[in-house]
Length: 408
Image (tube, rainbow, N blue to C red; front, side, top):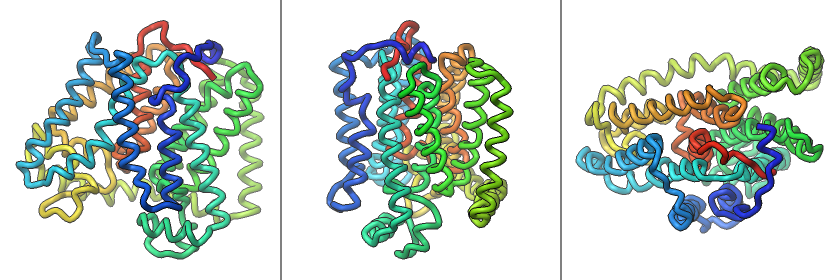
């Protein structure tokens, strides 16, 4: 992983696919001030441009079994519009779900074909912009932001107190929680690089995104953020052995001191985080009835209900069993045994290859793992801002040998 940071290759720096998150995040930011800006629609246009780029560069590859399996998974979900309509849902439900959860699958081929890791650098830039802007808005809490949050249903009441319950930034707390944690993982190669500027950038990114993940007040984000910190220490002290293990003891001491200081300064914040974390098992129990009802009312156990049938876009449709929280169960209900089995098999192949060379794929495996873990209780893979980095990481794991160099 560290060696990848040293390779210099600049011919694909400006590829649309590699800087995808930069223009998309800017569009979401502009939406605060210009309501007519439709970030979702324009992000779909950018996704279409990514597809064109892949076609022009001949990077839709189907030579390997994994590539053909991904194509089959995409085609299966695309064809599910047939039984979705037969189940009584309008085509609009499929189209809206297609552009946010299925079209981003093309980033598998971006990761599969990318010769560098520039993607993660621009991803971190975009997420830092989201996080820092969110922190500033949370502190100042201007009226235009309160109105914006209410307009997008981030909050139930248009007042500052309600907005401060959780940090939404301008993308929503669920997405913020995931991308912040993913950016923490993407920061690891920078922290472990030889360049001083890269290390400082990586450390700053890790800390800012850790703060943003906790300020999102998403229980799953808090849990996986803690796991990422542990994962990072495992890599440094036990896998790469970048530092002597005695420094691990020093770090633990620093964490204890920082925790005590936080308790003294703001005990209420500590207790708020504590109660959120300990309530996680209850949250799963509360949602299980919703999951069971959805599974018991599937249009077809083998084929599923069709893409979008159990998502938020089906709200208000008669007999729709919307799974508000639980992305994996949602996927099973929509894709059925056939489609969900393909997804699970793709994940098995990915982790099977990645674990054989953890040093090479530790970043990608981390992002994939936290996405799946958060998808137990959140619809992470149904967000246009979250899904691309997940599939990019999957594609990177399956990239050919000798195509792992990165540019920082």
